[in-house]
Length: 116
Image 1 (cartoon, rainbow, N blue to C red):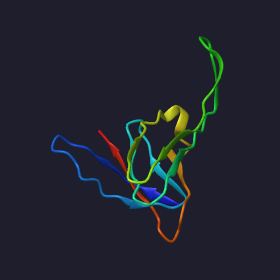
Image 2: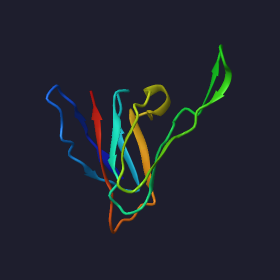
Image 3: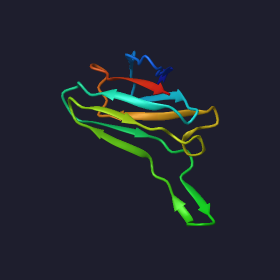
Image 4: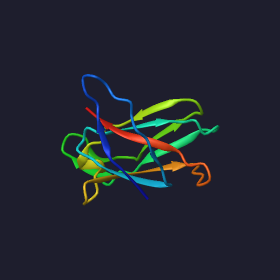
């Protein structure tokens, strides 16, 4: 499992440093982070961010269900996924977990975690 470090976007901008991904990956989340993913793999990829809280009982809406955040990224496209509310996505260690499919260990993908 790859653990990614967040990089801050400043007034002068950022050229993200990407990290090689595993099939499953984590990052520390404060609610401001998002995933930057540039797909140069030659095929479409799906990024799935795991929701830790899947249902809530809202006094306004009743019982509601929260699904995982999923984004399909075609070859040659860049995706920005997030931000992720801590109440829904953080585990007990304040980490968010995301997976990439189809994962290929022989030609792994890379991503960066950015925040403002």
